[in-house]
Figure 1 (cartoon, rainbow, N blue to C red):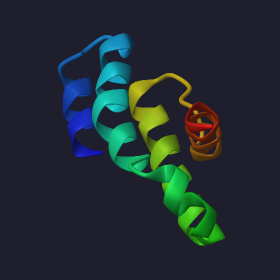
Figure 2: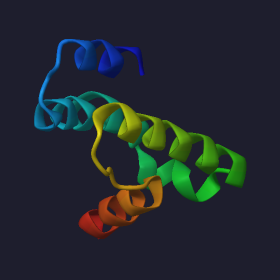
Figure 3: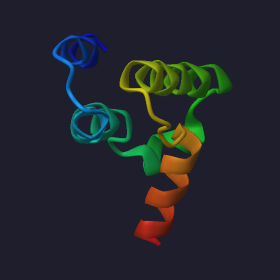
Figure 4: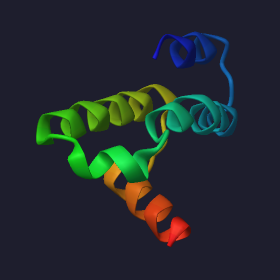
Length: 78
């Protein structure tokens, strides 16, 4: 979460910050999500969701939850 905070200091628009989040952070969080999400503990899911909510506060816009990302990726694969 250091990079989004640094980008915010440079007054980047929210759209650019969201693109950065989607390209970097979300791609890392959802790497093989269709495989590992079902086996993740409730604590793991809450910690991942905490990362998403922290990014929301830094970026200043609403982001999809981990559950929503998993659902959309699973449907896309099916």
